[in-house]
Image (cartoon, rainbow over all chains, first blue to last red; front, side, top):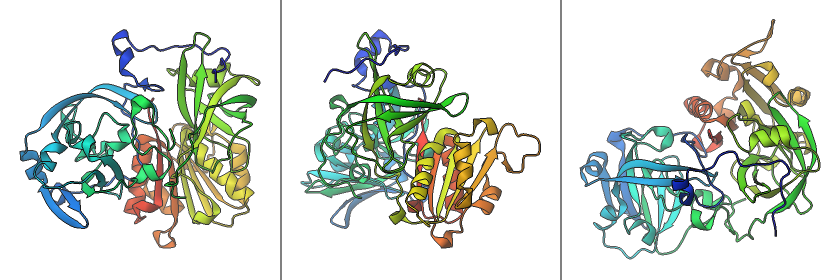
Length: 203
Length: 244
């Protein structure tokens, strides 16, 4: 289908030439940092915080806040893409690679379900988090990650739409089968590749 | 409805503007003629795609302003540095075309079976999906008790004022004005705070269902206040407007 012309509509903004190739289809650049979440922002004291890897109801391994911070962290500079159509280019994070955590566990899981304070979950194939493209991030733009943006720690999986980067993350459930998470059960795409514009179920 | 069932792709379809209604100086409602619309539920949103003559296109998401079973309408606020909202609020007129796909989002929705009592809290144009919920409640004849608290900078910026006042027979509608108040103003003043919620929010023991929509700082603040009033997080549904 050819798109009909919207009479009188013109381009006003245009990404700088260098940025043109950085925008997935249907996205536009924002300088702000909008927030998408479904409910109130949880606040867990750091002394009670842990990051747990579980399987079948058993915790295989968990890290306290101090133990997580003691692991080698990476500085990550990435573009992030929200399904609500904003993209933010060149964001800077610090975090521990999920690979570093999973490498300490003997498993043959195919999928993970990330879980968060507040009951939020999101599902990911293991290969998308265990190959160096996913982090547990706790620092944004040189500062501790703010609660409304997912602090104290959130998943950072920048090659997928940003809802996969679960805020307030508290761990991963290892699964041998795929299981939709929160937004994936409310009409959003199961995988969420922005470059294939996988926004909604069926895309 | 849990959306785990396999769904077909939401296709773009051509919408024709059926009517344009000016709501305030910077907000208008756009009624759309969508021959293949599959129907929507109060609180859902849709995607709009505009295409310029040179092929450039821009996409945005907007809350649906109409109730279940009504023709689709969106209500758009002009953001002066925006690309799409100035077009929709100033240039667009009846008979113009755009593309639409939807409806989207199964979380921030309400129907009579979801029960209540309902607490709806709006900041600015965040009232749009809450108006859809109130319209649906009225059209469906639901007896679920409902209260709306609507925070606006001034009375002149209140969207749907006439319609919202009509709901006062069956729902409680309260305004708080944060910047300027007309002489003799008898409603609330200032930002939503705990004192205001003590008067408006249903006690947690009544198991209320809360919907909050507005700019991020507004939603963050109100959601925190409701949690402090012992609303379970799972009964506080939020939708935030980004700055984009």
